[in-house]
Length: 142
Image 1 (cartoon, rainbow, N blue to C red):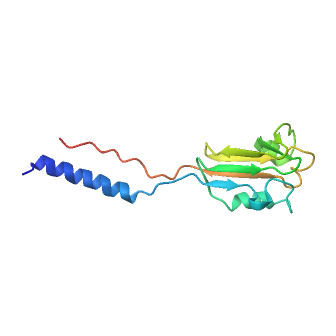
Image 2 (image 1 turned 90 degrees about the horizontal axis):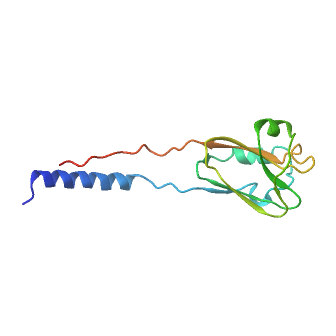
Image 3 (image 1 turned 120 degrees about the vertical axis):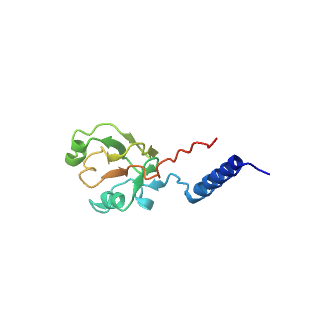
């Protein structure tokens, strides 16, 4: 017959199994910027901002820019984003740019070609902090 210590250990392990069963696993979501339109001149100046505002971005989510035509994907500062100025660089021409959201806060993306930024080819992605449950540390009973 088991001792009291064995019974407590079994109860503790059972609790852990139940607890783990209640915790849902989170996986990183993947988003295609602009959905089927991709990353190109939008139909209106708020298209990409509206698209991003309709999503809830979490840490480790992946955002894919499917670039069509002569456009770029450039991660800008807030000032560059707001003014569509001082924009140089970026990845361009019929590519797929994949960005992993690895820190909480706002990230700003624009196209650096011509007047595209001013024509609405820009968006802010706000990444929320992790919403995972706090870790529970269990010490075994001896």
